[in-house]
Amino acid sequence: MKPALLCIDLQHLFASRDGDFFTASSQSPFGESEQTYYFTTLEQTVLPNIQSLQAVFRDKGIEVIHIRTRSKTHDGRDRTYWHKKRNLRSTPGSQAAEFVDSVGPRGDEVIVNKTGSGPFGNSVLQAHLHQLGISQLYCCGVFTDESVESTIRAAADFGYCPLLIADATATASKQLQSECIERLQDRFCEVTKTEDLIEDLKQHLRSVG
Image 1 (cartoon, rainbow, N blue to C red):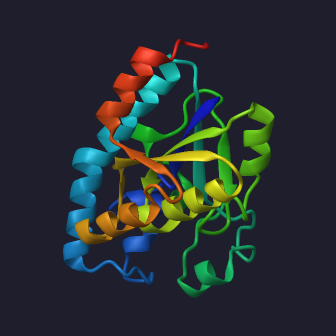
Image 2: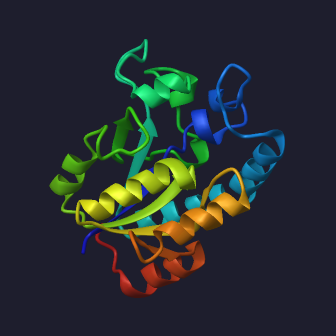
Image 3: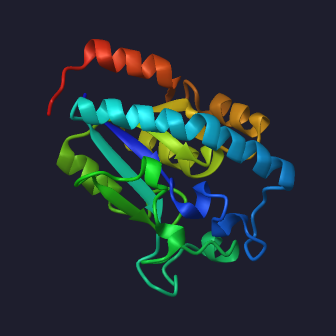
């Protein structure tokens, strides 16, 4: 099975302290303590783990695909109903749509723009995966119980073999993280950790670059 690393919503909107999702004008469900937990986990564990994963995937010549929330229109009218209701806005050229630099695209890596939570119903991801011959999806990013979960559930229904990298994802609390993993594991995906996956890749996958 040909693999790819899916990096989900690692953009300023959701993965930066000054992201619009966390400002007073948005409708973020994160309280103060949840933001503290989220950014501590994101900055100390998740982003460094994703950097390590990207480095190994690139070294092995395996596709690294970047999925972000971004409308096609500047006024965001093509967003889903729920993104409009929650005032989630990420438009072409906006800071909200920009990737966090440390885990952003390099070279000609594929970028997929979605207009809702899950990319299979709101983007061209499925076409890209088909054209690239990819069937094994390694998933990381934010939020675990929203876009990451939506991606994994849809991927499983489309016949892919998704794998959740638990310590390369983050959400509002340890409890929500655990509950999401429990919902997904052995029903829609397998679950692993960054260190174990990197070791497996180094031992079993030759470079295809």
